[in-house]
Image 1 (cartoon, rainbow, N blue to C red):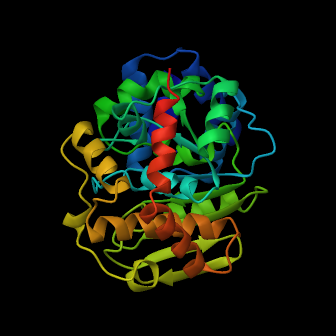
Image 2 (image 1 turned 30 degrees about the vertical axis):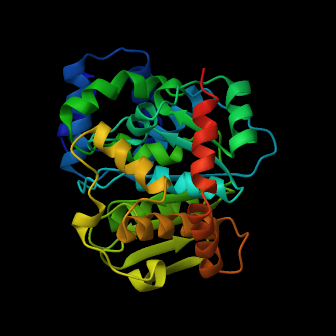
Length: 331
């Protein structure tokens, strides 16, 4: 690692193969914590290259425990995190609203590294047991339309760097990798990114896959549709800017979508919204993200129809039912 760090400190970049080798060695535990922290810090000082990101992704996919969910056409809704906004768990809530419509969701998530409560934190708080058993996960998605894939159980390298990422407490390149390495390989993806450069990189990478994707970026820095400002929306076929009124019928304030001071508070907000006790602003933001995910599947004529389906899922209680069934199934 010393040679690699010296190389990088001279403002050089890694080839795709070099990046892959480094991440494979990380997963083998060949480097100490100080070396890993230094390595991650390099990519805070400069932008990551596409070759480096591809190499890191290649390594994670080569090493990962893949989950075969059969012929199901699944979707994942995931943000890179790292926007520093401390919102409640919008993507994970949107997953349950999508599941409530009957669509199959394979949600990939992890503990928060640069946020107070990541998807795994809130799922754990509400009683979900992490697992990588294919039969159990398949049963969950068959019966409740959703299963949760806790990233460290599928990616050895993520388990190794987890404590270091938490101690650093800032966005690292691992934030960028999460949405690209879902071990169930969903057909559809709604990916939220924290800046326009990442939107450009993801667009380039996802255009080379066979899946259908939508990339979203809140123009005031959110990695989701926040309704606090306009949103950049990029799909397989093009890009556009959409206003809060087009997406959620209203604008909201940043304080309206605050996530709480700890994982317990985040879980309370999470349950409150699914129980149909959330504020108008909270509901609007979750419904906009769920609507955009449903629109990505191509099952609706347009975004407005997809949004209406999301509203029905939440207001009818189907989204909450999906959650309750899932928790009841836990060992």
